[in-house]
Length: 301
Length: 250
Image 1: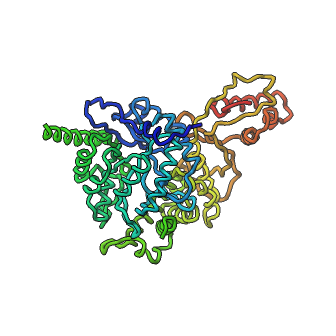
Image 2: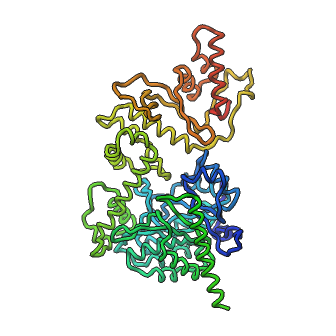
Image 3: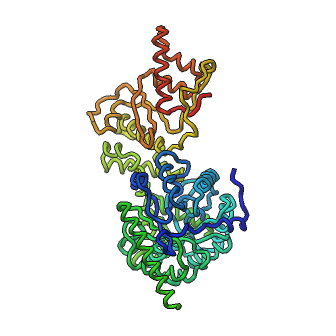
């Protein structure tokens, strides 16, 4: 039976930084584990500072998925990243889901547990999508209460990721970054900043990506996601199906400047390349971040 | 609109198969180049095609047999009637084989193929057993009254034999339904395997899974030839242990 922890205890069990990079770089990098890579991973492991596992792909599972997770966890910390918590949903949180997530997080001593700032359930069903929330005071109160509930259930801090979106509600009274900032502050949660999502949503809704970054509380940004997107014809589609685009790398450098050497994960889901290529993409993140940090340090001197 | 109402409205827009809702522009922001209805349509397409992809990834052979267009037509109808009830995406296929049995023109054997693929998925993702029982630890005195608990990564089902050959890619002409055959699906290491069982073994397995004692399970093999029957029962049950189907004997 997992014992719930209060907010202060949750703070002390906040996501840890992954162990120092073997390269000596201040920036820790990794990528998401994906099924087509499982056989290679079982053979030779992964080359990264830490890895990310989609929680639902490992909760309550045995066989190859469990072996992969154990193999990777034997070599490095693993962050858990969920897609079905529906933290903003109005359906009750699923106790069975939380119990399985808690068991998994405990079993692998997860580096962090994260999910998305969105809703993905309706009438007791799962959408398997990340639907945007209206950014209202009512929604804020609702999500704060649910984040606190989840953190108490898990006994650790939850990281919340900004989603990419294609539509906004007329009812919204707050900007997304204001909503996210207020949420994590009031609930004592962390931010998983998806830089690609900021870029995509900024283009789709016409706001400033830089203003978004500058509006976030620095100390709450604990992980970063990077991914590819595509042109959907009049909008940008967050499809995780290509290398990180150059403008997103530039925004990432800005994020590193704002938030420091935040551990960074590459996500890739569609048109998945070989594992080697994914590892190279993670190294590119390290290089971009390290170069930016070094340049800033030189200016400061 | 309150949060709950907004979410219901969004969910309807994103999951309805009957086109855009009235009044979308009053609830959502749009632009001249991309009005709210077009923006919601991105979610609507994403919803159905993500789930359809998930179905296709589980029912690959069924899709091959039905053909892309028919699979998509049946799949979309299924998804509209059966929204997901599980946090894991691939579980969306839980009722797909049963749905196929109700579709006019789809032979039962094709639904059997889908049932086989579903069983293989369930076995693939089943949790590991806490322990695996071996035949060595069996107490002879208590054996007749003991009962077996099987590992989670084991399924058994009855199928038209055509489904097995179709899964193997050896499609024969599907003429008329044939006598159904007991099939067991299990995980060996990381690999999912399936195999047709003799009728008596299938009956014994079902009996054991339903909580029958070992003496009742062995009685399935009773043909009046005591020695041969006992040897046969022993071989079958020993095979269950050696293939690591038994989690515990209690």
